[in-house]
Image (cartoon, rainbow, N blue to C red):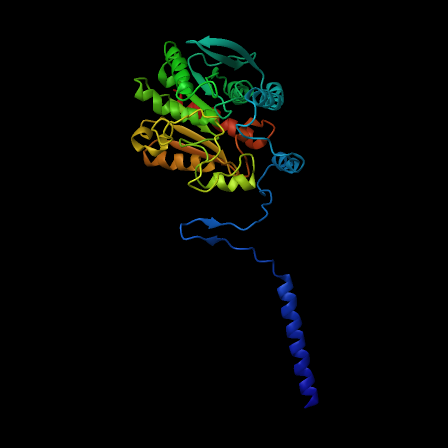
Length: 362
């Protein structure tokens, strides 16, 4: 009997030890979100590792962020200093890009609007077709560097003539100044090129402006562009949707907006003034009748970019309006990742952009 009791005791001890070991082997259970009655989600703190699908170059860039302080963002910065700082920072990328993609750049005033004309260096380009570029920069800055970062690779790889528009910006100007400048350039180019041979694209503010122009031109008696590329943006206002909140904490390039009804920080320095942000030109994705007049559209965003939700929503609404639309989401990529030509992900995007315009400007 004693032997039996000893065996039972030993078995129990072993079972308890095994259970404890099994518990220790289990991965820790992540904290779970809670939900408020109004649908708001309370998200617990968590760590987000780099995506396993990043290229080695993109992973290296992500690791470098550990040594980089977040850039200052906000209207409290002096605009002259802010513009100079952005040009100096982004200009380094322009120098590298021009070595990889040789182009010629010429200043040209078109219909009273300053532009730069970018063409491939030492090789022929299509003289019957042209692309218009509208640069990023929050409707306030980056008229030089962002314009070049967006225009150089597409001109070189696609053998395109790219006219990049130095449109009016805040704080000196207000909406609809930028889209009016695009209209002036477009009207002038229509004297030389057929509308089915003219495309328009831009990144960030330029992506938003591209959507605005596609809504604006038919309203003002002009033919629609042959195709448009909306990159780093959507056809709705910035700071809207899930991605603005999520990437405020997972990427940090832009601060997460406050909860409604508080208004998000205006990174455009009042460019839209008192305009209704649901206006059919400012947010055409909210207006199916306006979207139905859009040409074939290419949208490019990043999985860690605040503009992902606007891009996704715009794509779904374009498809609903029976417009040909293609959405590219760069896994693990941030805002306007196409500016970084050293990344394979950016170069993949260039190939898609070139092919998209080649297929649609016929």
